[in-house]
Length: 187
Image (cartoon, rainbow, N blue to C red; front, side, top):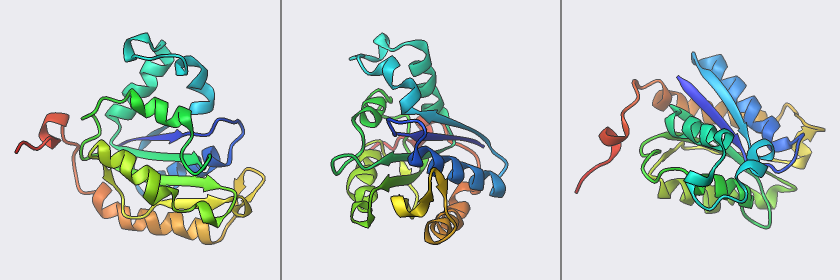
């Protein structure tokens, strides 16, 4: 199973990237996976000025190919002005509209406090709903107090990751990957 993590953080190091990396590690503890992590902070300057997919440099096109062909996506963003970061959204603006149909996506976010936790339900779930992706039942939100520097502390968020994966494993271990044409339903 190919698992791709996407961190929408604009900074390195990043709590969001640390959270995504921890989720990827734990997915790998349950399933046989090949994982990779795409960091917007690293590739953002390469695609920030592009207006069309054809104008993207090779590293941005490679990131898109990884996203579009993953068996599972683990995506996360810091809360920035009550939403995801602009470059995170800009990256997903280039994803082909039907490439993620039926694809399992585990949603995650980080923020300064608990009041930002609804970003998962009010911003991320609708974004991936547009793509007709299969957003997994539980998302993972971590606030600044859940970290020691850039290391996730043991506690409620760690337990939330375990619960999110427990609920996702039946879906993830269900079987083979469909092709995009298999997943697009016709009316």
